[in-house]
Image (cartoon, rainbow, N blue to C red; front, side):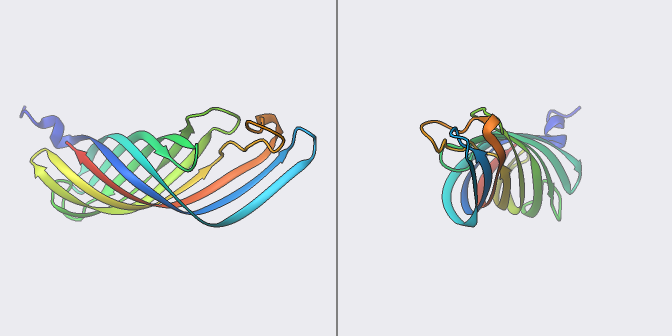
Length: 187
């Protein structure tokens, strides 16, 4: 068995990124502590910068197709951080080891760092990249993607400090659309 058998079939790596939020849609319906109902709904341009870091393990299931599991830490606005667990499929027109462009799609759940009522979001990314082989077993990937996140962040308490208790929330949806620029190294 060759020394690099593992790296011919499996990939491990890290990915770091910058995310520029472009759009935010917000829709929530709550009861205040005083007993009146508050319903707010808005959508529009929303510029906010955030970062991300992922660790990944993947497998080249075909010469042109890699499936990988990504876990990490991302920001999605002020005081809103998530732990995503994503499945990514990457298609390479030549092979997974060749230099050149590729396309990818990924998606999965994302958990909030702060607990409370609604604590699970869903994340999806479509994008492409360019792979630069650094050695036989090491690649550098430059990626660009469009990210969509359906989230349920905490709602500030309208009657005072803190956040609205979960039992007072009837609806709490936030939709984000962002442009991701990332760099990854994998072995």
